[in-house]
Picture 1 (tube, helix red, strand yellow):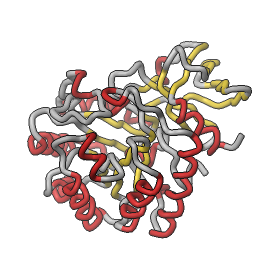
Picture 2 (spheres, helix red, strand yellow):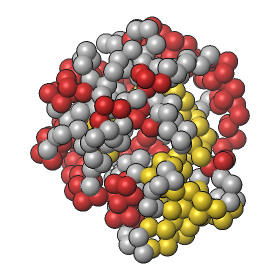
Picture 3 (tube, helix red, strand yellow):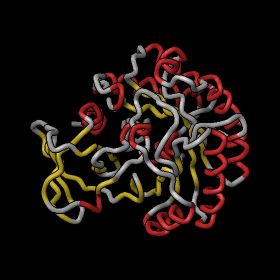
Length: 322
């Protein structure tokens, strides 16, 4: 089985039962997005490929940890030997840190507003990065919204100023104001990700009531002006009810404006618990569309230094998973 087929089928399933030797050091937690509040996840790697799978003792897929990261994946009738990757924070090779683990908004696909997470202090964040400094090459920052979008932005800016101490590339993904790209550029951020989440404004309005779809497009355009090609990203969730044609139109609109799409398979939680994860076949179809759109625009996701496109665990990424 080729890696693309295997990963698409694993992403369709979304979870794995982890057995064998103790593996606590290989389990990654999540304090933001649809994975927040879960039992954690592991990153299974084979050669230069990796996939992130949530832990679920009832999953039909099993990983047996043999010790020191050596692992076997049992999937249907296949036994695939590989290894578990040790995360920095949230993902391997990066300190990917959620600043505020709560949110005043209630996007239907996200459990964060119901979890009552707290805001990390700057001292705590600095200590977190220091503790994994020896095994990371980048710092990535995301956040909920504790009080207001503007107040959150101001706090994240202070966090980033302090993180400059480590001399590592910093990527930031927060809900923006009109001035966010300039402010992040001024404090030395290398890459930014502002998330459309939905392929169409109509779906966005249903999923994220009270948030501004048009503002995100404006901020993405401004970010490209400031950060340049291959340094601006946007999540688009696959499986919110969009058609393939609508998703392709969104992908091509992004790439034509030099924004690299991050195409995230839906994790059915929160108010969307009754939804289904996108099928492996659909994920592979969209990968072909994604690859062609990036090539037509002269964009290269392999140049990403931070955040999701550098990690590749949760998505099929052109150039890495083909």
